[in-house]
Length: 570
Image (cartoon, rainbow, N blue to C red; front, side, top):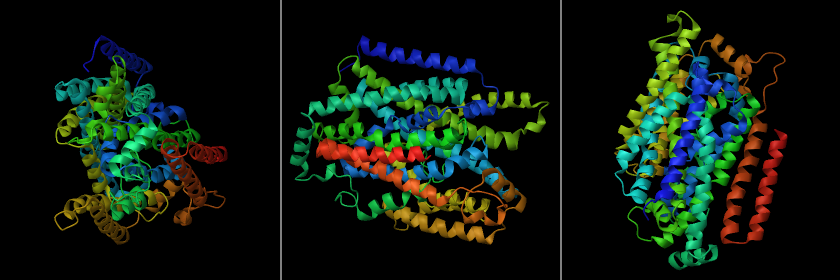
């Protein structure tokens, strides 16, 4: 069904809304790097929480979920559901620590945690490494998802449209900064999530309802169809080794954007922008609950309907936009296009701003033009904000070029996971063990990258095998590097402890009389309860849709009570 005037009117209305939001952000002022990259560090929990969710909801995400369900059933989503564990550790162990650190980026953390030339080398390298190859790989798979949608629903030359979108987004973010990002994220998440739910309703109705959907899937896949199972350990389409890697290893072993072990990336950026520690914790908890418990099911229902409607697609990921095209009437098709555009814009805008923050705050400012070269602090900040705007445009151009190298969304996911395998433990333990130094991170990053590329040629070709091989080699190397190199200066370590006040035994030698560090075990206990609540909610929704509505409703109630107990305790 081609777009008509009503669809174009909806799209035009969305564009006007974004222009107004950008103008408001510009009028608010961007006078310093704190303003430009951290929203003035005065944002409320609900705004930063929704912004995190919106950023992780890109145009690629529903397509990837559709492809996963087609290949491995609902249980295949554990490839990303497992990151709820690292996300909840961030909520209950790291959010307060990140806020206390008082930095603008997680790479700046290196300056307050480590000492000497290795720390400077690590900060400079990591800033460019995350800003360009890693950030552009992420934007690459996001763009592939949007390109597939545009191809299906418009038939237009998708790359011409995408270049135009990137130009508009790049200019918008260069002007608006992080405040503009989070405000538009809030608007865009409502649009994107509402559109997903609407499409799920039409998709389920198109196959005759939930009962008929289950009956048809049973006819295709047999009694008790594996495609409806949420348990990755029993799915015949998921190898046991792969399932164990997903559930037992990936969440703490691999660096992955939005779910970094120990926090980090744009999640840390949002925590830096919070008003205080309480808002940082609450916003991050909201993100994890919405991201893992609330968002997935509309996409899953559309994916299941697509299996019935299009059983022989060469690219199963395109089943999602095909459902849009075939089911939605005029006006609603434009609304769904806007929903996907919103998801795409929210993710791209965050990554452009986030990548530019590394280049300017962690490379240009300390190494190219330090603040002491200016006559005043105000002059320095004005210069850095101007450079940040141009760097955002540079990030945009790089992202478009890298996007041309990708064919599938999931391929990008697995590439990032493999490159980061084995580094996660360093990022978690550096907060709680004084002996970890800059060489630990350097060794982990370099070894993980080399081992992930070497794994295939030496016989570790499957995803799980590659992950396990890279983890083992990387862990051995970074532990050796830690013990074979000098510890950081005592003054730096003491200043870090006094500033952040981490708990646990790893900082015992720096603890002063009367200190009252937070209990690690209490935080771990909250993680267990919160993870149980989210997992129970996921299973409960499956029960509501394909089992007993009464049983599912009771499980949902228990899940909500567990979560409420945590909120009251916090």
